[in-house]
Length: 562
Image 1: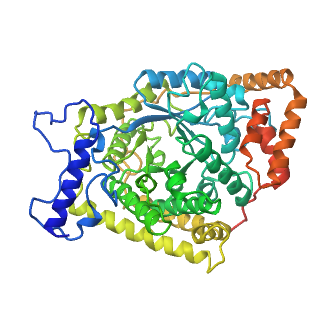
Image 2: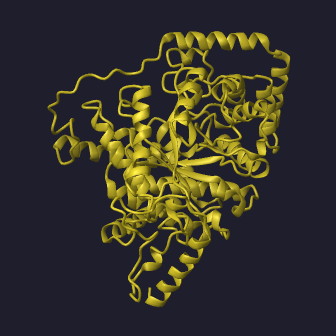
Image 3: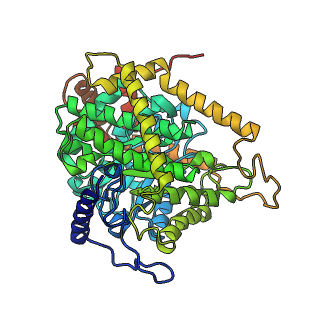
């Protein structure tokens, strides 16, 4: 790019920056040195390829979505939490909000993630252990008791039974008297990554896509600020993928959901802003920063050039980041504070929109109050003390970071081409990327490549080529065992008791009628969300709703592969 084009871009950025709202904050260094809000090539200098880097707030958004960077608005501190019953988790949420957290993120227990009630035989011993147990709208009311759902953004990490859980969230908000059209938050709902990595599905892919399409339509029409899909790369990376695989598989899934929306006749400029992303931030500092920058650039280009988006917000890739759970070690667990801080800093320098920092004891158990506070304070130290919010994309133009960004982007593009090839020449029911994803799931293509990457990494660890402090090097320690959070068996007994009481107190005829009506709607082209909401209002449980749909649609069984 020649000097005149660079100067014109800087002038466009300056105009947008001047017009944007900025925080009332001190944007000087610790020594009092004034710093510019963004840096670029020297005045009058040419920079070959600068169009791929550009200016913050301008296509291709490599350097961020907003001209102000974090001077306009810092990332949202959104700590992921859930354990035991709804009352216990509600107390943790109030602690997080009271300590300066900016949003909530719900972790559900395994029975809830699999669409089963706490009294289901398959739930035995699992209730409340890896997240909060939610059986009905009454639990959701208790979960958010004393928390204004109209005034706080809430993320829910659940995919298989995401739609009925979302309906419970809406009913809880209704019972608070909230205006549902004003709700703001994110539902994960990403079923593709379940088949690719996490394995928490209910049905075959097609019925899940039916529900997701209904949810997209409903939110676009009724709750425009709510994001019905958070496309997750986190679980793909935690399963053992490389950074480029995480990026490519995640964005391919996102393109699949764009094709789903288009197949429903939705306007990409309307529904695409409702798609958000969820990435892992691993411990290789610069690789992660490059991954996040490449993600924004790829998404903007594909949405514009392949899917025809024209509005700026439709081109924006907004993402939440969680530090890498798989990087935490049971050995010398206090070292996890350092790992988490490095990973969080990479997410911030990569321009994350919201962030969860893992607690030091999460490799052993759910976080204690103390470790959860340390995790929260890690973000606040980065935000308040380090100066990283002063300059937009401060590593932009770094030879190393730009080369890594280009390389990860190129690897991702190669993977996109392979996925589309898997789908064949067509015709495609939804679109070429979706066809490739479905074929890749059926053939075990994704899981096979992730397994190979995980195996290669494990070999490197066992040979000592890659090192983990406290595991295969620097293993001596004077540290003592941690006190960890333990979930009492009484939690499960109490949850089952409350569930039995609710079932006794409700109108069973109304529940049966509403659930039957929901199944009848599933056999038509009608949107299922209103009928599901009616079932939830009648206090139908999550298990009852999901069991009715299992009976109608069947249960997905992953093919055995060797």
